[in-house]
Structure formats: structure tokens, C-alpha cells
Length: 206
Image (cartoon, rainbow, N blue to C red; front, side, top):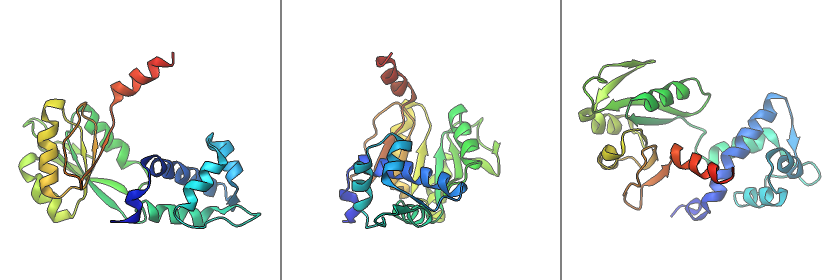
């Protein structure tokens, strides 16, 4: 088993936050940053930042902090973002189309490269450089392109069927926008993004 699989999810979730912050510093030609400064800017405990980063190696320089460019590149490699990651998106309704547009204009290595939908009216629609393809072509496309990540943006009733198809095709990581818990094999990772649940959680703090 890859040693990173044993790292707590909460740590992995903080790494992209660190990476985004470091990239912002690079825009302003900042050469190094201390954990104290990072903690102040990110509203995090500096000791927690040091502990998180130390899991993956000794990146800091005593008295100078973390080299921004070097740490940014290492975090990109740790997250697997040093190479392009192709994604198949299933469900090209309002949400799916918005996700496609958003992804197209982001400077990221996670790229949506295939669009699929089961509704006949969606087939053939053009979204940027991509045409919506029928579900019957999903498995072949994913396998031919070597895609390992998928996005589900379909109604709840169809989500598990779509998930099963993605798993059959060889997908290993799924971002699920459908308001339903998916059943997947242990080797497949699912990340749920429930807009309504997030708003309901926020409502508590009002």
C-alpha cells in the first residue's frame, strides 16, 4: 500500500490550500515564507502546518522558513498535479455545463476531457472544444484515454448506475455532486459535494 494512503484525510485536504497559497506568493515573487506567516494568512495553527508538511519530508530551512517555489513544486508532485489528469464528466445539465465552463478557464492540471449524458436532447451539444457523447461510449472512451477520475452530476436516481459504469470502465476517483451516497469497491475513492447540505450546515451558524 502507498504510504500516503495512511495519511488522515484532513491533512490531504489541507495540502491544496497550502499549494494555492504558495502559488499566490509566487505571483508576488516571494522567495520564502515561515509557518507563522502561513498560519496568519490561512487562519491555521503554524504548528499544524509544520506537522502536516513534515509528514512528506523536511522542506523548511531553519531561520528562513519554506522556499516558496521548491515547496510549491513538491506539493504539486505529492498531490499528483505535476502532470495532467484527464476527467470524464457525466451529466451535462445546468450544473455539469457550469463545471465544464469553470474547468476550461482554470489554470489546473485536472482537465475535463470527455462529456457524457443519457438524455437524447443533450447528445451532440457543444461545450467548448467537447461534444456531449452518449453513455454507450463512456466505457470505451475512458479506457482508451486512460482516464482514472470521473465527475457525476446527474440526478440522484441515476447516480449509482452511472457510478457502476465508471467503476467498470476503470475509474478510481469520483467527485459526486448527486445528493446520494454511492456504493463503490474499496479501491475507489468517492468525494461528495452536496450544495444543499453545505448550505444547511451554514444555516446552523446563523
